[in-house]
Amino acid sequence: MPLSAAQSGMTMQIDAAYTTAKDDGSADGADTNTVINNLASDIADAIHAYMLQALVMTTDTIDAGQAVAPGGPTTIAPGQGTGTGNLA
Image (cartoon, rainbow, N blue to C red; front, side, top):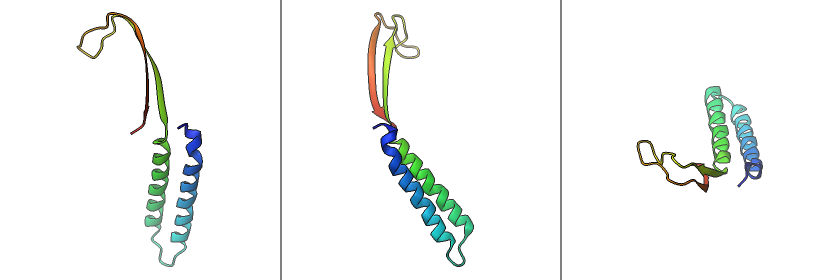
């Protein structure tokens, strides 16, 4: 999916992370280091989930004489290729 379609989900997750940090930080005896660490972790999780939604599409050109793999044989004829996948 295009990342623009996943942006609202990330925004909601980050908003929830800040709300949780605000609520946790306002409690009596709250450990500020824990609140900050949890906020950072929640934001990192939101960004990671957002990035995993990316759809990667490639168009490839293979030139004659191009190595198939390092140390491997070379191609004889030119060609075209495409690829589609997701980040992992």
